[in-house]
Length: 159
Image (tube, rainbow, N blue to C red; front, side, top):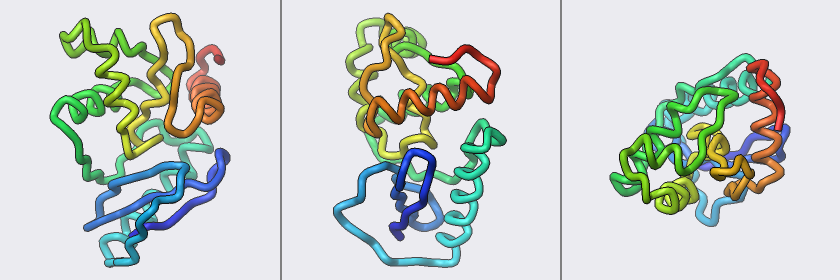
């Protein structure tokens, strides 16, 4: 099932299959699946509640069931991104070093760019080695908003 939700960042689109979130983005999907099951409705209600709480500053980590598709390397990167605490950032290089792949910061960036579950897998928390706010599939303005939002609600310095 594909649906949408209004957020402070504009309309977001998501897809749930078999009760698992498989995509969340700010771009309308090309294909639309209308299959809705009770399991999908339960996940949808939970997603909407968690998105609402996130933007109120009451939720720091999502617990929506995910179905992640990608290469093993991409999944490893996305799992590490999920470990970055609310309000914190990490550089692509630092993440590559955590993976013991010091020369893989570009590959980490590519994996991040292929994240289909924006916000829930918080790739907005990755920054350039200099701290520069580089690329975000939702747009750099949204990335700035999200980082400032998280900094505010975590009591850390703003970007």
